[in-house]
Image (cartoon, rainbow, N blue to C red; front, side):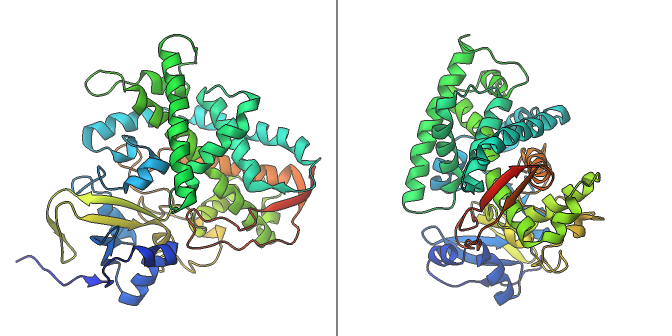
Length: 420
């Protein structure tokens, strides 16, 4: 006889508003209140959803035999953050085929290339920042990352386009968890950006635009599906944007890197002129663990099964808590303190540290750009610690736990920026 027990429930006709109010803390709050890593709630118009947090829940969530990604994410998220028909919505062989496309861009040489491009563009920006009365780091990072990823991906970007493309790519991830005006701005930016990307794809295919074979634009233009046909221009455009948009979103982490350096000056001193690469790695990993980034991921049950005494029913919505897992007291000592050294001898699994998703890179749904993110953040730290000086004037550096994505309220303002 299969063991079963009654699942605990966060009662309510529709807890969507409660989720929006509590934001990143919604699932952790219910975990503590209900004393469970799995509970049922109602979201998105009152549909039942099971929320999972912790290593075991993440391991279950990434079992591709039990869950599918198709039709899991709300359409409002697809119309802004991910795009319709992209990698995040695929399963099985179609997902494997598309994931191979993304992972083909993640060789060590290409990852090193993006870090070098980023540092060069940051170095160029220093000359401009030196003449500015104040520098909004978040906004400047958006611009630097837009230039960086377009150069890395083989996407032509004229100087007079930078502001426009930066604004549009920023709007896509700013709208990911937003309602109201930010959401509608994101939808408009998605439509506009995909149109631009589609025109580039067509130009590559008809020979008007010559792009090196190792570049993302080339690979997206000529990738073939399982049936041997090229992706449609629309889908190729979605996937090209899904290389550009997440990279520009690293600006969120850059703002939090700056905040961490400011709030923990002793950690900044450790990084000065160090030759130990692991010091930068530990700091970056702790920024990614400690600060809020993307809060949750969603999937749907493929077929009925029982896990930990609970019946999961076909088509049921299941939500994995990313932020809460990275702060789970069963996984992390002093989870609400910033301690980079926790990663010194860290021997984690693919399911206990999941700021950009968990599981296997090649076969699962873990973010294929995670390695790019880490290298860009390390390059940012090196520039801020060893190649520039700046002051941090009085400002509101608090960050909201119900704004998604969260950011320091001032976006981190610097003054008196000088090259070292």
